[in-house]
Image (cartoon, rainbow, N blue to C red):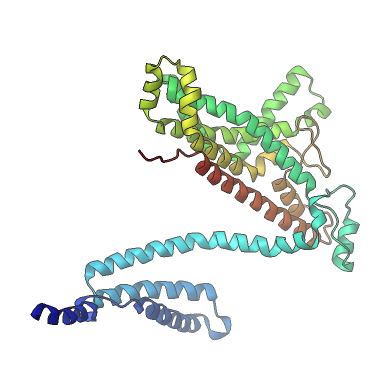
Length: 388
């Protein structure tokens, strides 16, 4: 009976502040006080007429961190206060890292979405026949926006597809050699070293390399006439430049996925008399296909938004070009760059800016879709858990 009578008292003591349990509403009270105090300090330091919202939020965050530490130290213990401080610092770092992403997405949506909604024909037209007079009429007289991004979409699709066809077989076979045949010899160590170096090279260097390589090929086998040198700028040259950026990503991601495959699976296949190449094709690659496909998709998403190498190697065209081996091509990043830097009508830059923001939104959506496809592929091909 005495134990039963003491239970409510113990429960009450456990929930009281004296027992070291801070109520769940404390952080909200500290946050509100921090916002009020931060607003007051911001108004005093900067003046009420020139209130800085960013400075207010920064001051409020600092006050909140200090206030929560002091409050937790008083109501609970020093250890809990230190733990709370580091937890709040982690959340603060996460929010700071999230702010630029949200800001970019919001800015692109706010500037590009109205153009896509009001001008749906932007997806089905290119810039053929669009002159400065059309943009001046659009800006000054409210005429419909002329031109579109069709040639940029086609160029991005064709160049990226060609780069994938070049990079994936090379990267996959290099990874298979490193994991299955290399045995950590000098050649395999050299490959890993150069792959790591290629991973960090600037994209413009990849573009210059592709342009120089194709120029050497043209001058050696065709001639050195200026017209022929201009023919170096093709979608295929741009695809070679993007391949230089894609191959290291494919090699590293595929190598890591192949190393995850348990050696017991290989040994079981060898014990059955299966040859090594068939073991790789039928056992190792199917087991690692989830990570391989995900890595390849992420590599494609990584090079889709590249501007510098395509600007150097593919040139710029105002019409659709489906042939990657002949003629200049335009990709979406280059289209955005040219519309902002060199508007169709320098005296009326608003229509060009509208096209650029719309193309930027489409490019972000493409990259986002590719990342989602990578996640879907990883889940679809992941080994299924089965019960015994």
